Image 1 (cartoon, rainbow, N blue to C red):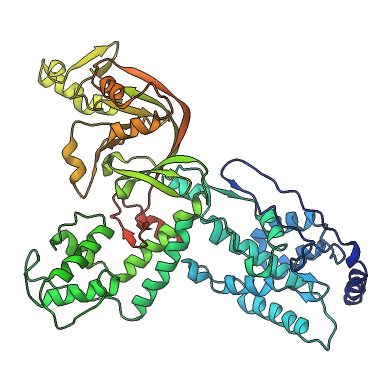
Image 2 (cartoon, rainbow, N blue to C red):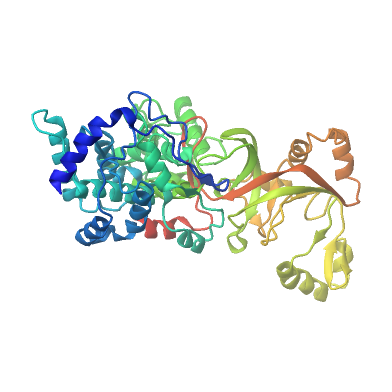
Length: 540
């Protein structure tokens, strides 16, 4: 078999002039499918060509899997990949093993940097196989060689890496955690095939991951370094709250904590005074935690400061996993709501155009994590009472008070109940519909005071908007008849009116308790629905 390979190498050298420079077909699937790069020209000097001279017997894949059974789950991917290549070697050319092999080896052996607890399968064998072939390739006194076990080990390890780093836990497991946003799909085989055509320095550069993943990965490294240095001090408060002008030992601990987290640029360990510098640092911390920036360190702020670094690392890792599930890029404009952040964001691709505060469902009435297409704006809406609220609140109210319906401006229509349009309507003056089976939508509310609170989980599942007119103006901006004045009139008309958008706008409701904001700061939010710990147990 070795002689056959060497003969193939000689034939390959002679055949370089007639090598195949044709681009392979790339399958473009649905919108959430990420195609492999398709702009690589293998004929350009410095790029890796797809050699078709050196082949191996397909039966050797089964032999390889029998030798390394922990890689068996990737055998279907391996067969598919090589079947498309007519079982031609991918990690070897006429000069021996290609440079990308070392890059992949390095990435797999450092998989812990991706926030994963998985151990490298057959690490010693993987390292030995690749290193031996590299030595042969670099040794100019010996003829280049190919080895089918090294070839298949590299491909199997690639699929192992793609499965855990790029895709995350299986979709059925994320659905079991009530994540109903569509999971991204990647063409792993085509992606690998195209990466082998890329220049060496771009290997794995176009990874199919949401940009927040990389930002969190950088923060994970920083927080692990903090942990290695002993973490941060536990703050032992001797009073309920601290504010500007206070002094004490706890102030020194707070100052040290904020220096470690990056909220203070410098740390004067002898300073026990709550001065203007500390005010700035505390506000920075409160901003990162989604709190009211009043520079007052009360029980809620102290509780967050005393979260151990190990828990913050876990929070980062959990949200890196969630980043694996979403599409790397979204085209056009869309709306995203992050439940723990109590915020709605209007995006154009990856750029935030603007945002607003929202109120989401209580823990007992969780807002569902899913997506839909916003199609209708409804001015002066009726509120059709949902079955759960009807059973638990309205009907008991009617039994207690015969005037309940009149007091709440409600009426019975057939077997259903609804609240009439008006300023006191539970939906406020406008609602926004993206049809879904969860009966969730965006809407105004008469309870404006809730938007100023740190915790804004108060609804029965729907999402209340702090600035509903702003959203209406944005959605109807391409329909010139809907001026700001006309929108105000329609909102206060007291007569329900449906408006169909020219182009539906995608809406994504997601759940991230750690993310990096546009100023480069790591933000944490409370796990309002207690979802982090379950996911952590699954992946750690």
